[in-house]
Image 1 (cartoon, rainbow, N blue to C red):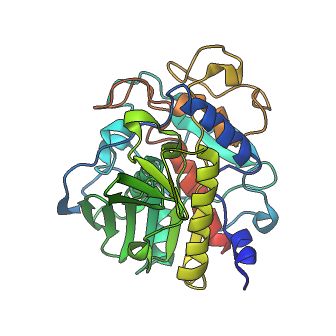
Image 2: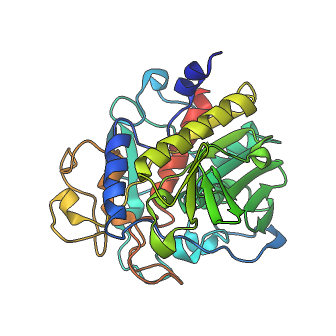
Length: 369
């Protein structure tokens, strides 16, 4: 199959639909004002086995795709209140970073925990963690990307832990660049590989070089599901930028247009998928662009940010234009309620929260596949 044809088959997650271009422009504008995503530092590696005792389990409903799922656009819809949410309590999930544990660090409201995504033309199946563990017995799901991928990985690990039997054995290893949670009774591994740009950064005599046409992904091969993400770090400048030069082909430059660089890097990633991944046995997803909410002008509130927001943007349309529907949930970021993380975080997402919806859509996609 031609490479161009395979590119069209890569599913997009989550809730991004028709607005990638808009998201890129908004994120690029944010870079100019110092509002790009905030990097997370990884803890020292540790390994332990744990057996769950008691709480954390919730009854699972559904498990089969709803009527019309095969022809449903999962990315067009709205947020609806659901009193059965959240699916887990972050306080009882050992995988959640302090940066994402908003309730632990003093967030006073809980309404953001109660929103469920509902496509306009179908019902998403309820996330059924036990069903996923059974279906994917002996398999490995690997998230590759920046701290937004970390957000989604921790969410899925917590969702599965809450759904698994209380006596389940769970092995947890935290490291850099690889962290993993293994549900040993099912042989299911859910892992995260930190790669902020996907393409390589190489230490050379001139300094650290971001190589737009080079990717080292051998460690990602062998997974049964690959979920990739990158974008926020492409907007970083100054001391927040982890490279000194950028290389495009044979040309080494101090900098270049970031959208152009991103496009070239993503083309390298797509070629790597085409040449290196056996898509007959490995399902490949690109997560999409996760919006930030630093600029209240985007939703008609002037200089406000995500801080102290308690509800999604009202109305059927986002004031700034056609964007991923998750852009409406300006209230679901950690903002000031982020452990060990100074300032106002309007890039990442609280857990439980929006990344749970990403994983519900991933689950629906795996069912359809």
